[in-house]
Amino acid sequence: MDLDAVTKHSTLHAKPNGLILQYGTAGFRANAEHLDHIMYRMGLLAVLRSKQTKSTIGVMVTASHNPEEDNGVKLIDPLGEMLAPSWEEHATCLANAEEQDLQRVLVGISESEAVDLQQDAFVVIGRDTRPSSEKFSQSVIDGVTVLGSQFHDYGLLTTPQLHYMVYCRNTSGQYGKATTEGYYQKLSKAFVALTKQVSCSGDEYRSLKVDCANGIGALKLKEMQHYFSQGLSVQLYNDGTKGKLNHLCGADFVKSHQKPPEGMEMKPNERCCSFDGDADRIVYYYRNEDGQFHLIDGDKIATLISSFLKELLLEIGENLNIGVVQTAYANGSSTRYLEEVMKVPVYCTKTGVKHLHHKAQEFDIGVYFEANGHGTALFSKAVEMKIKQLAKELEGDKGKAAKMLENVIDLFNQVADRRVISTTDAERQVVTPPGLQEMISDLVKKYKLSRAFVRPSGTEDVIRVYAEADSQENADSLAHEVSLAVFQLAGGIGERPTPSFC
Ligand SMILES: CC(=O)N[C@H]1[C@@H](OP(=O)(O)O)O[C@H](CO)[C@@H](O)[C@@H]1O
Ligand SMILES: [Mg+2]
Image (cartoon, rainbow, N blue to C red; front, side):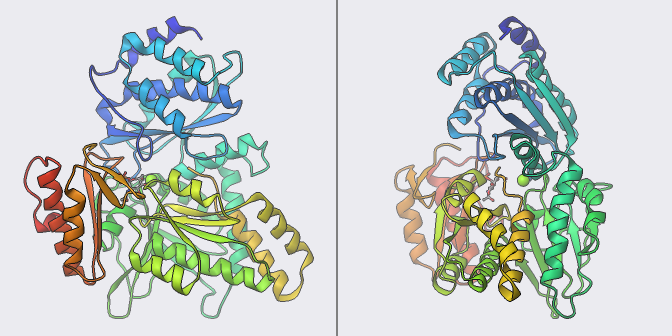
């Protein structure tokens, strides 16, 4: 490690004095003005992680659903998963080291993780469409090259695409070809085959309106659409030619406002969906004949996928264990439906894909979704092999079901990707400040079928308040009361929360 070179280049990416940032729910996120040093340092860290794992590591420059002025960065581990928790801590230490401590912290990480500094390293980089992203990916590259590592800059990419590239490279292409073309081919082939297998009457021409949040999803879907045009025709909205990223559109907007994005006209029963800024979330929606808006969020997607998988497994007569993983944000009715009607075990983890993914890996088939539309289905290697075998051997309806499952496996991209308030029980109970949980529990008792919890966001400087109750009005009112309790006990600043705030 040429530590003098590290320090010399670091002066070009100087850390604002005293700035403390944390590797949160999905990497670092902040206003882009404060992030250049983080990018450089994450380039350095990616090299150490690559040397330690003797694998390719990914670095994605994005702030997902956050406003256009923000940016962020997350590291992708060898099998396409989120960065291991112990390395998240290293990331935070490295990000917060003052210039004079940088060398010491880098050496400390290498020593504590027994990194072989002679080992070759390889880092792949992707970025979203934010104005600051291109310059930031150059800062990442600066960190990568100063430690003598090789790299490949994929340029503009969605987050799931970069996860895929990392996984492909570390399995010598067994998972697929590590190019955007390889990604489009693999997923589209499985999708088109599956649509043929499940075709039902009146469905011969499927179409979908896609709100791309004015982000990277638009560019990549434009490239991809002709690969699957036999199975689906898509119309793109909010494709970035006019509007601002994530502004009045995108999955987060649609989910939290329960209404369509700006710029998309919806006729009754038209199928619509929204991505977020880095296209790793999707929510579906439609209007019924009476014009009522219906959202198919992550909770419903998880229910549909697990029912579909259960049906197929029943058909082929395989008794595999399926589990569904949710977070505290899952609507209580969806949990009840899965457990009581579908008889599928449901587990609750902390917010953030990394937690859900980890839990889902414990099952033969693990389906996980955050209510906001992040998620996938994971098949254990043994199950994947078995299904591939059955698809060859079985005939008739059983054979058809096994072939469908085989395509489902290929279709899911199975790679993973405020502090006064602390929580426990998968974030459903507040521990500090004292007294807050009691207040929330008392408020919840006032409403029927109600739940409420609060937690510090890991991507924005806010406390998130969640509430559900038997009617919209009651849920709003409970949310307001809980936010007042938070404001009072957690030292809220600025204006007191008003009902419209919820
Ligand atoms: C309630 C909510 O939607 N939280 C989101 C949000 O995290 P916060 O820690 O709540 O800011 O961004 C994460 C990354 O996109 C996503 O995984 C998570 O589900
Ligand atoms: Mg995202």
